[in-house]
Image (tube, rainbow, N blue to C red; front, side, top):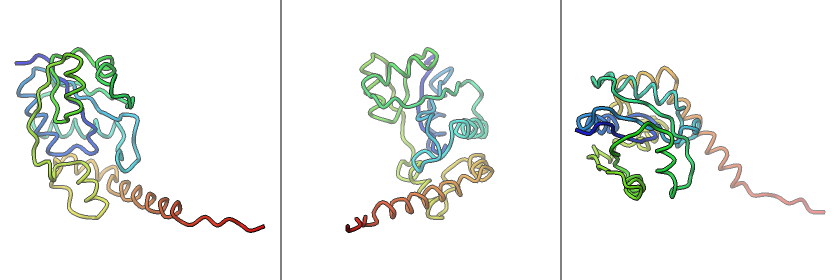
Amino acid sequence: MVKRALFVGRFQPVHKGHIKALEFVFSQADEVIIGIGSAQASHTLKNPFTTSERMEMLIRALEEAGVEKRYYLIPLPDINFNAIWATYVVSMVPRFDVVFTGNSLVAQLFREKGYEVIVQPMFRKDILSATEIRRRMIEGEPWEELVPKSVAEFIREIHGVERIQMLATNLEKNEKEIQAPIRIPEF
């Protein structure tokens, strides 16, 4: 059994695939550091939820899944510099023994720094993806079955679907304004 593991994700939003992956990590480790990636980002289509909202989703979803509290939630703002990203993460979190990830870049970056990396199984990646969930929210399609019940309830509490739809509408409006021809006045 690994003493302490690291698992990093954006959780935009937390979905059943994240929880399945984390259940696997918890089965292999005594403690888990859960890094909340892109912590500085919110209110965009790719990152609609704040760090504190994502933390609340994780706390509720892990409690719903019956996972005992043996984890740390650590915000990790982006640095957009892959060559030093793993070193940056190490400087931001408590010591850990192994990295669990389904992301090949994250695996490579930590392996280059000498860390053991375990690629955990992916669960229904075709539909259990935050990108797919956000798309469904924008299109008004069913999305609730892809997230834990507690997460769906929380997203409703904070009017998360309306936020994402507003962001999508504003993006479309802004793109139309940008694509409109620019008329240069004649002198």
